[in-house]
Image (cartoon, rainbow, N blue to C red; front, side, top):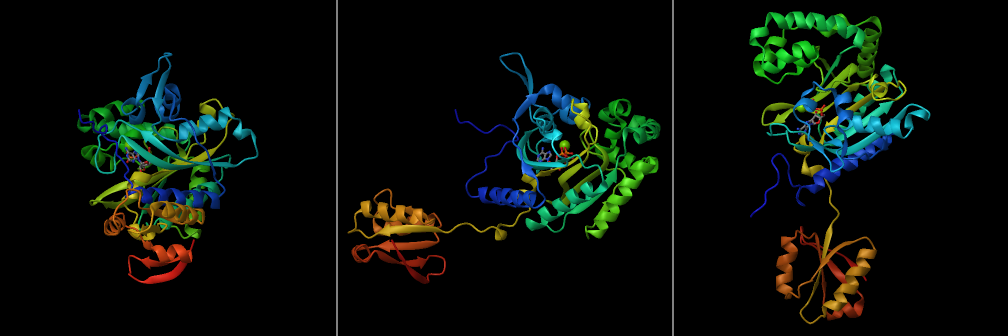
Amino acid sequence: MNYQKPKGTRDILPNEVNVWQFMEEKGREIAARYNYKEIRTPTFEDCSLYKRSVGDTSDIVSKEMYEFTDKGDRKLALRPEGTAGVVRAAVENGLLNNALPIKLFYFSNCFRYENTQKGRYREFSQFGLECFGADGAEADAELIVLIDNYLRSLGINDAILLINSIGCPECRKNYNTALREFASKHYDNLCDDCKRRMNENPLRMLDCKNESCKQIFKNAPSILDYLCPECKEHFEKVKTLLSKAGVKFEIDAHLVRGLDYYTKTVFEFTHAGFDGKILTIAAGGRYDNLVAEIGGKPCSAIGVGTGLDRLKSLVSQNLISNAPLYYIANTDEVEIDNILLIAEKLRKNNYNVEMNLTNRSFKAQMKYANSINADYLIVIGKQELLDGAAAVKNLKTGELQDKINF
Ligand code: ATP
Ligand code: MG
């Protein structure tokens, strides 16, 4: 039997892993710049954590979650998104009892049973950031600016930032009524999911991926007309701060997120570079009620998740510099044992070194050095052994460099 990877998963092969490392390196750099500290949480959690936080009626929980029962009869789920686990860990470990705000970031693989297509997989990776205990608009602006800077550091300068406010539960009461009223006029033309959402969770209808529903909801009432004075003021401040920071944005009054826990500011960075299709590459928002919802003391929060699988296809290889590889060849009259010692010395001096491990002829070694894309060649003959030094040839340009001592 020839095994194949499960549908919706991918192997990241050595020739592309450098892009992943680059995205992670830049992510860690930017996180440090804004004082975010890394957290690592389990790949699976109690199923009920996601039901409670992401929401029972969300697509993620109701259709896409990888749920299982373990041998001890525990109901568990593979992480469908990063925030719930981080909030759980912050509460469980008392992190929110320390001086606030506290800022956490993570690189996590997530699992969702989705229809797979370009940019949509069943296992995917997120670089996520969560800031707890800052309820002012400054925190919203800082996080959005951070993501803007992160994308630019990856060479992505043409993302579009969409922002909206979905208010607090108070503003949403009236809005939900208006939205239900609107949807009921189009009831017969809604997809089955939206028919269900209309009663359970009307806001969800605005996130429907079905084309005909999308057309209908283009004319839906705007939540911005229903914001309470506090939510309105918060949103105005976010906009002012982003403008001051020179970050361009568009207001999308129908932007909601696929998860239930958001309040006030929500945002998405989208990009058109997916075979002409527009996809979201980073998405987040404020979730001031989630910490209390899962058992912590009330604590405001704002977070974002960036989809690394989508970013990966936008990052140019040109930005990535790889450490050079040195190939040490032995001429046919030199014993390999000598090369082993020389290679070790160079490695101790931080050179990346490959050598003749299979007793190849000198000619065959040259072929191998080219096929593994070595950057420099060091040839060790009898004379070089005596000298304790050898010439270094740049295999890309053919030029000779300074001699190397060993
Ligand atoms: P979408 O509307 O595209 O389904 P979402 O609202 O489900 O996205 P979030 O849960 O907010 O997305 O996740 C944040 C980011 O993670 C997304 O913007 C996207 O870049 C990435 N992402 C989400 N689901 C997938 C997936 N199945 N495959 C690859 N990346 C994904
Ligand atoms: Mg989704």
